[in-house]
Image (cartoon, rainbow, N blue to C red; front, side):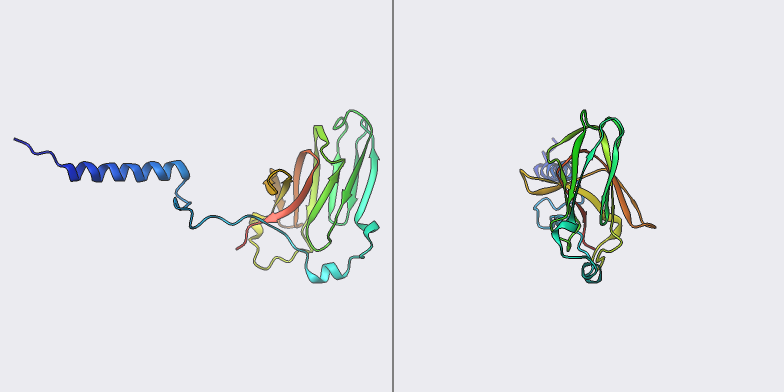
Amino acid sequence: MKRFNFNGVCSKAVVLLVIMVFAAIGCSENPLGADKKSEPQMLMRSAEAVSGISLSTAAHSIQQRISADKGGVLSLLDVTLEVPPGAVPNDTIFSINIPDVNVFYNEFGTSGLVFDVPVKVTMSYRNADLSGVDESTIRIGWLNPNTNEFIDVECEIDFRTQTVTGYLDHFSAYALISDEQ
């Protein structure tokens, strides 16, 4: 008569449970949350770059009426918005506001505006302090006002020109963010 091996069944059940947990949450994360990935950080400008920027608030805000039929380009410091024809149904005031020259954080307006055709944004990080930054993780993030967290924007980074380009479907606050090394 065969005997039932209770320990063998329990061992297999535990192994199966562990496999299911890692499959559900991913093997790169600790299931207990001890090694949680840190939140992305906004890029900071280098001290040399900030010292070369005028502290006048007027110099850190620009607005322009963009034609719905023709589109247009709006640039300020290290940010360029390219609005294609048809992005908005009517001629609209577009703006870039940089509230703090120490960080790569921009408020684009008219806030909450949603586009029919994506608007191209290019942000340069040439003047960034890259100490402790993994350059390959630099990207554009939009600030979700409900959660106060940055949401990644699909974008491309050009290491040669030190620019990041993405396409926006709405206006909000945007920043260059990265993961620490």
